[in-house]
Amino acid sequence: MVIITTNIKSIIGRVIILLCLFTGLYFINFGIHQKIDAVPVLYMLGVILCFFIINILMSLLGIIKVSINTSARQITFIRLFSKQTISDKEIVGFYSSYYNTKHGTSYGRIIKLNGDKVKELNPGI
Image (cartoon, rainbow, N blue to C red; front, side, top):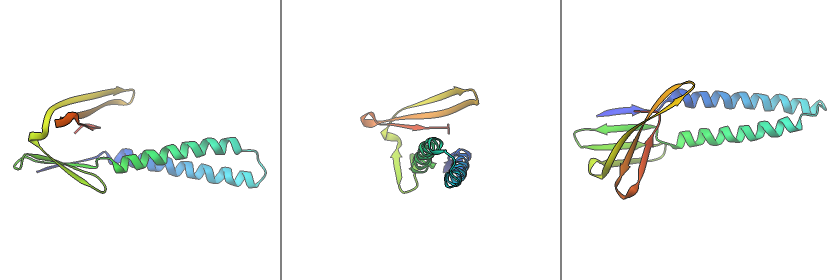
């Protein structure tokens, strides 16, 4: 059995950015109490904060681990609150994908299942 985990570094990076945004909101709130006109910046940071909170929640609710059991011929997708097992008979196709960015290349996998369902695993496994 092979267990493949997610990229924890990206989730930790998002949490660090979220903490920096909270710190910025604290200092802007302190400035508002000192009668400094920083309300537009506060709204902008609030929108960015909401974006990062949604992004972190989507990361945590996505696939965290993939367990491949070669003897039972099945793949298990493990999420924070659920687990889904797929037999190899349900898999129609398997594709490799890659994304070129300015920070490097990320590899991914696309698994096509019966009934036109698609599972994307990024970054690659």
